[in-house]
Length: 66
Image: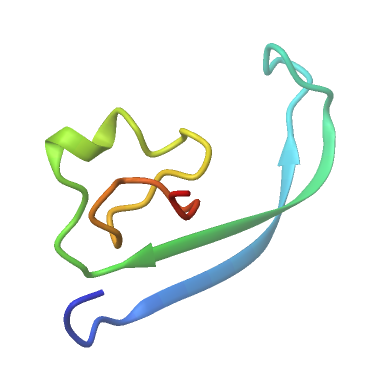
């Protein structure tokens, strides 16, 4: 990040109810991460889950070019 920003990591026990679709009920541990940074630019938002995507290099890939 370009400037000093606070990053917060929190955890808590949660219970998933039986009525929640697409999951099994039970005890889980939830981890949350948040920061006070500038956020993600609109052009990068649709790529954030692409493998090897990065905005820290000029060529938008975490892999070195050969």
